[in-house]
View 1 (cartoon, helix red, strand yellow):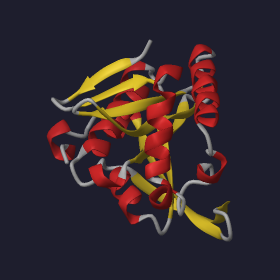
View 2 (tube, one colour):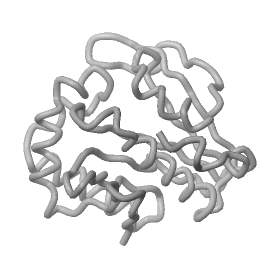
View 3 (cartoon, helix red, strand yellow):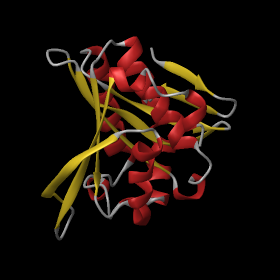
Length: 188
């Protein structure tokens, strides 16, 4: 299984069905905060919906095709981060994430994302990591920018979010660039 300690207060670990209730409660509590940016929020209506998400994630992990991990901050489930896929042919992946609103601004997501980039580029030997973010989601955009990702471009009206299309910004990090980034430069 997957488990990582990141700093003193942050842990990443595969979600199991045991955590479905806690993850659903967190999703439900953050629904208004998450909905403008994530298309799956309205589809997550019950603990059973969350269990199905966790089962898909565990299957994805078993198939070596990515995974979704819970983010814990001081023992509290704080959000989710993961690899949407692992493209072994082209040696690339895409990271997605969300964090409870009341825990933002503490460097949690920067630490979690930095760890996932390390896993992708150093542990898995991938060549490229992408992060795609709705152009208007400034807090989410700050994560790849803080980590030194390159903004490659804008995919115009590339995502449908409930009632409108939104532009999506594509950020990337290549292995050679990540090797030059000092961990101290991206602490927070």
